[in-house]
Figure 1: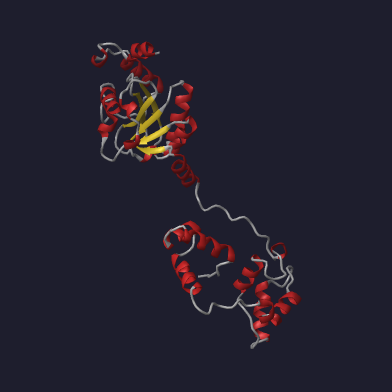
Figure 2: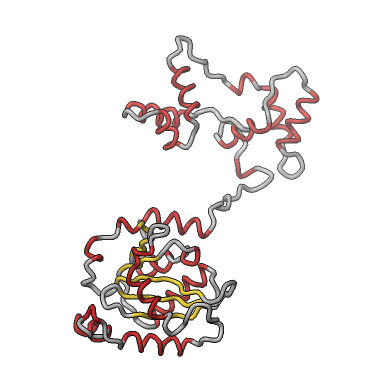
Length: 308
């Protein structure tokens, strides 16, 4: 494990944050250092005899002169110079290779980063694309738990608040159907899905919503892995995505009830492989023109046109 001394800038930041009443652990989290480092810094700061600053140019004069004279980025690296020096000058003051690199990074010696054997490259981000998307969602609050869904959505007086679920076919079958229901009008759309990959499902739903000009103001789904990447669609559409609690299908009541109606046409256990999209469109038309008792025996299309 590599250790690095606190520089003056970090010490000043620690002092300022501690003066504001923050705990050592909180300060450590903000500055991305260990809280034990702050503890040791405070202890050393209040000692009667603080550590004296060492002039590295005097203490390691022979060592640095050897580095300056023999270092050549083409054929004699820092590691080689340090290794040879320690073999030749056994009793002279010297430091580790890592410390020399620290001096170079802190510009304490006369070797610049640009003159190193290997050019410094910007380290690749270790955060995957999916993780970046999750972090974006957290920062911009795109994906939220259902308990944060506004109360006006519960009143069902506005078109555009959608519930999305998946209807599966036979066991171990990749083909499935995505059902989208508007909470206000109970209008349903059905999409044929050949795979259950979350990115495929996300792209399929987004393209269908855009192609069919479906008004979207919010989306509510369950916690299934097939909707894991649906936040990308929410981000593109500029809406919030609300995730239901586990094993709480009643939080998507309209969706679950509509799935039951769809099962009248596609019973459980029936394969979905050979069902084309046009057949699903016919099912949607039949359901959306069906008189509903909740709407005084009007259909979903009539309610939609009445609201508009």
